[in-house]
Amino acid sequence: MVRAPCCEKMGLKRGPWTAEEDRILISHIQLYGHGNWRALPKQAGLLRCGKSCRLRWINYLRPDIKRGNFSREEEDTIIKLHEMLGNRWSAIAARLPGRTDNEIKNVWHTHLKKRLEQNHVAPEINGRSVDVSRFNHKVKTDPEIVSSSNVVAAGCDQTKEHRPVSPQQCSSDVSSVITVDTSNDMSTKVLESDDVLEMDEIFWSEVLSADNSSLTSDYPAISTEPLIQFPFSPLIIDMEQVQATNSSMYDGLDFWHNLFTRAGELPELPEI
DNA sequence: AACAGGATCAACCGCCATATG
DNA sequence: CCATATGGCGGTTGATCCTGT
Image (cartoon, rainbow, N blue to C red):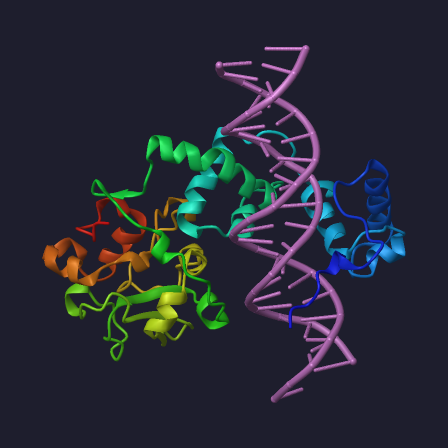
């Protein structure tokens, strides 16, 4: 059985908000806050449902909303973030102060999508377009993973020695195992393939923005390049392809360092 | 000036995750 | 542990505005 829409109750107003309704909502939130959206309209004397009030406040009335057209920089940021995050508008909005998910969604559908189609600006690696949509996985909010201080080793199935492993040591399984340091004693957490498939850029941004000071000399510091420079999730790696390159420059952590920060120099990747 | 079609954007819908009793 | 309430999110709609003919 499907729950009835919250605004279905008789007498509740729908449609565009009037200036008077806005004024009532603003003054009520200024006085009492918005602890309970469901109860708010009744307390404020508004003939609206709580959901409608929340939306109006979040998308239009909040004092920190930035109105007006998007700058070129903001648009470029949205495009880059969308490459990484997909249609996760709230996550994109969180990185654009003063902009709402609704606004970003609208801009994407009305301007940016067309701009990309016209320019055909698909993410490219080594001149080949790469399908990033496959890697826009849901974040798995495993606190142990997210709070990990640094990447110790990234590879496959070589976790017993807790050493970085090179792609050459790995099986051809794209996402078999990644090991991550979870404490100062360098113990590792082994992520099974399901974990890996569910990780995304938030995990990687956490890892890469973490303090690298606890890394030993055996594990060179990982660059803390801004997240925005990641053109795609590291999960795009096709180990079979990587192995096929037979390139010594991708040994151990250097391989992953290069991968994370200089994706444009990746070896062959699957073509769409 | 009138109309059609496209573009824009505020608002709504339905679903899901989490909180609460 | 289960049912229900609530907040939040992404997808979609529809009213309005804009532009070309």
